[in-house]
Length: 313
Image (cartoon, one colour):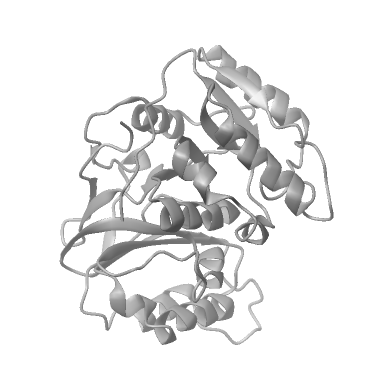
């Protein structure tokens, strides 16, 4: 596969905003997010279908695909930022013209449900994309200093990124010691597991697997990890980085359950590969931006993650 790095972002560049999954819960966040981007010296264009709604999705499948195609085709647009995640992005995968993405590579940013698009883009085109802050979620009102500093540095510099700092210097812990090198692939566990067996899932052979989740009880996490194991997905990877599993514990003290830690341990502690956890990526205010598809070194023994190349050209 030919890996494609998008061109770095420069002040004055035009950024396109789209809603390929759900619509922003607060529509005023589009305006405040736009003002934030403009205050940094960027120009902004908003997809024509932004603001529409069909059930839990930000418009029909075709409307959302049209905005993706428009932003990638428009030469003046140098980056495409998602407004939020939510639901509905996987419905678009068989409707996207991947030649448009391949022939017009540019920065593409989002996380959560946007995982589906990022995996499909990498599989079909080799494009490096960015699991990072979304405009109506992370660039609305108070912007976290850690999140923005790392994000803009990665998007604007052609230098090797290097070792990743954690917010507040938090530690990265290990389930299994060891060192692994490979391209980092993954994202939201629910979305990731739903793509197994489809033509939109990249090969996991020789990869570093990244997983994060929000709002799923331990029995659901168990079910999804079981799918990864039974499909031989876990057997292919060289290492695993577990991001934050936010609000994934059983709240009912009377309900019989395994803890999240017990579920995770059941699947990963017996593996003969490095596995690290507490990587500050996911549904967090202080959030590490991860370039999906970039070469990565995981040293679980020392608790470090290193992006060993630049993410932009």
